Amino acid sequence: TKKTGVIRMVQHTFANSLFTLCRITLKRGKSIGENMKEKGAPVGSLKKHCVDPTLKYQLDGYGVVYESLSNNLNSFYFGEISIGTPPQNFQVLMDTGSSNFWVPSTYCKSMACDNHKKFDPSVSSTYEKPGQTYTLFYGIGDVTCTMQSSSLNGVAFWYEAFFPFYFASFDGILGMAYRSLATGESYPVTQQMVRQGQLSEPIFSFYFSRQPTIQYGGEVIFGGIDDRLFTGEISWAPVTHEKYWQIGMEK
Image 1 (cartoon, rainbow, N blue to C red):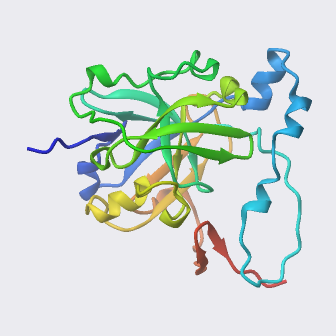
Image 2 (cartoon, helix red, strand yellow; image 1 turned 90 degrees about the vertical axis):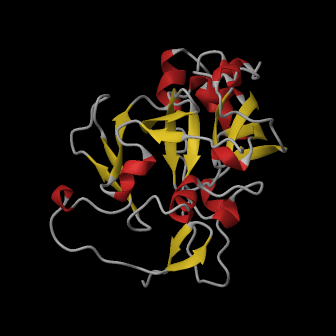
């Protein structure tokens, strides 16, 4: 019989999300920029490698005023997930601006993997042979990955990474944008959860604490919204382009 891969949220398994909201606690850690400064790494040298993250948006004829962004080393919030059977835990960045999901593996010989947790396929009963190899491009650098089979919902395991990832407080990235943005044939984790009927509603939501700590900086909630975490009304806006979470705005 075909093996079934497992990706778990630490607080609730996906199966439980049929009956309750599926939550991941967000922790506020140090950014890549902060870690580099603490270790005396030349942050200024990254300017020749980094690109303006606003340049990736395809505007499709909309009138736009460009405002350059330069805080792409300042990702602070991470959540813990587990992959495989038995579960192996990782800190991942929840990224609404990308769609692939990856973590390091024991195959990685890059220096960027040396100080991060690595997925060990030899101890996972649900691991299957790797597939396509490709490179993912981010504002802070590149990651070369090998795609795992669809039984693991499109998890990729990196084996080479650009050096700023060495200073990341997170192990991998969980992309939460649309499938049209994904590299390879995989579905983003959130869309895969919807396809498998594991969410009561096709919604995810973020809550950020006003007093974040390394233990609790907020939550990402899959399957709905926790009304206890806000007051007032929610304003909904249609997505104008199903790639990023792009909406139209009037002046």
